[in-house]
Image 1: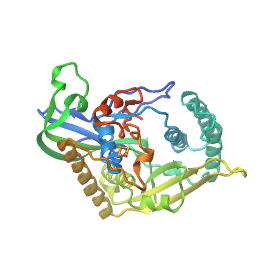
Image 2: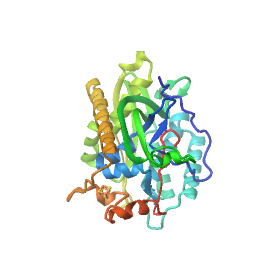
Image 3: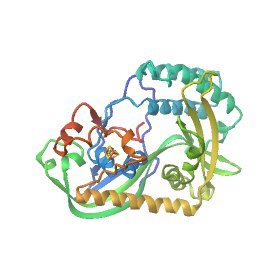
Image 4: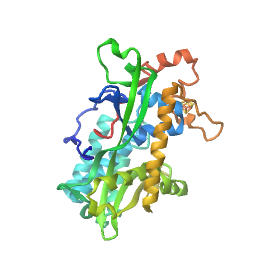
Length: 357
Ligand code: SF4
């Protein structure tokens, strides 16, 4: 049984970009032909959008080598809010937030026409701190083992799937790099132990129950955004995890999600363009159990595609995922050129791992 919080959490501030190792799909266990697959929502959601994108992201472990300005901006907001939640809002924390913004944009500079700049973030966090000055979140943060439950990674066993077949992919794609010929042949797999990994922004405990809080910075707000989190597999997955992380006496107190939304658009002539809102979603036990059933089925589907050795392109005419897809220059190429293209500097190894970032 895994300890769901048994992850060394890196302490200290990055002084430069972190270059993490490539994240292979499978890791050998101490049993012959059995492997562990640590899967997170971000990765499996690519497969949910388009199987081919899932293959490129998870099996081939390649993503577009481009700056992710919106993602970086969102991560920075999380780091600033983390300080408030851990220590409460005071002058020292505000100073640390400012320093963090400066440091971030030194490491991740943005192009001149980008609106998600350092000064914009300073404006956002200043307004956010004012609006939520009396929310008492820092006092309500759940404490586990003496540690505030803030930006906590987790890993939880989800299921074991029997394969008992040779996978028609070169083992060098699927496994950690090794200097021997073993990797240059299809991989025989008997079982895959699927472990669900992720990171929870924070959890609050008060008289109304225990809540997972997820902060989202987005340029898209409104009804569509709010509706999405009634059923979101990402946030229901956090609540599923929370119910397994807390001690038994707290399990029934886990109510659902508070969505902490920060909608940031290009500034208008009147200087507005940022809105803040919080939305509460109750997730029933049945909804959480159905999350688990959904996720197991999606994982099984992924592995069935993998056994077949073919992930179809879900390129639709309207509302197509292709427009914003990392691989929209790769998919139109002749098939015999795609692997070479993916190996080119236009793409980089997938290294992101919620355990370490
Ligand atoms: S470009 Fe379209 S078809 Fe190709 S992987 Fe992306 S979403 Fe799928």
